[in-house]
Length: 394
Image (cartoon, rainbow, N blue to C red; front, top):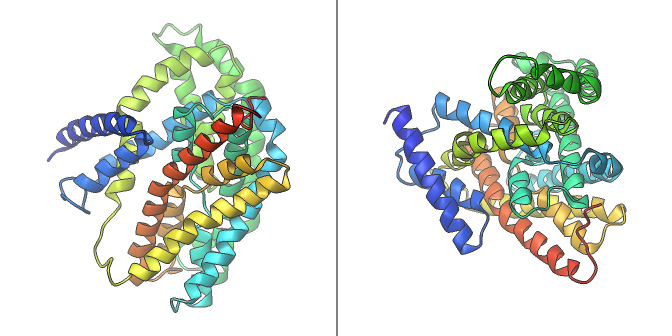
C-alpha cells in the first residue's frame, strides 16, 4: 500500500477509534494507539513504520506540544517551577534505582541494569498533554507541575545518557559528546527561550501583520515553533520541548486565539493521530513468551516508579493526596523519549540486541497504560472538587 492509501486508512481508523473510545468512556488516544497495534506488525501487518509515516509522527509530536504550550498559563508554570523540579528529580531517582536493581534479577550486568533504569527515567508528556486537554485539566496547578517536571525530566535524562555513554569509553558519534558542552548548550537554549518569549515572538508576530500573505500570523507561529524545536534537538533535547516553549511564547501575544484555531484542525486531522498510531506500530509480539516475566515486572515497575516517585515529589511540595496521584499519573508515560534513549543506547552498544525489543515493548505497554491511570486520577481529583476543589485553576 502506498503512502496516500496508508494515510487514508489511518485517518479513517483513528477517527472511528477515537469516536468509540469516547463512547466507551476511555481516553481517545488509547483507541488511536490500538489502531497502530492492530494494523501494524503486531496483528494484521498491513502498515509498517516507514520513513514517511515516522516523519508525520514526528511532526505530530511537535504540533501536539505546540498546542499544549499555546493553551498553558505562563504565570502558573512559573508559580509551580520549584515543585516541578523536585517532582522531576525524585521521579528520575525512583526508576533509575528500582528498575536498575530489578534488572539485575534478570542477569543483566550492573552497567546494563543502570542503563535500563536511565531509559525508564525519561517521561514523554505528549500523551499526558492530550489527556489533560481532553479532560480540561491542562491549565491547572497539577497540569503546570506535570509540564514543568517533564521539561526538567528531559534535561536530567539527557545528562544521564551523556554520562552513561562517556562511561562506556567512547563508542560511536554520540559518545564524543562532552558533558560540559551539552550543559552549556542547554543553558544557552533556555536563555534563548527566555528571549523568544520576552521579545522575539511578540516582535515577529506583530511583524506578521504587515506581510501580504493569507494567515501570516499562523505561518509566523509555525516558523517560531519549528525553529525552537530544531534548536532543542541541536542541543540534545526533544524537539517537543522546543515546540512547547514556542507555544508558550505565542500565548503571551495577542495572536494566541488566531493561531490556536488555525493549528488545531490541521494537527488533529492528520499529524497528531499518526503520532499515536506510530506508538502502536512499534509494537511486536515476537518472542514475547520467552521474555514474559521480564516484560511483566518491568511494565509494573515502569508504572509504579513514576507514580510513586513523582507523587512523592508532589507530596514534598505540600500537594494533597489526590493531587499527588494526579501528578504521578501524569508522569507515567514514556513514549518517544524512552524510545529515543533506548535507540541511542543500542547504537552505542549500551544495550544488547537480545533484550532491546523487549524493552521497546515495555515502553509501549507502559505508554498505553498511562492514559487509563491519568484518567482515573483526574476523575478522583474532580470528585474532590465538589467539596474541596483539589484541582485548582490558580
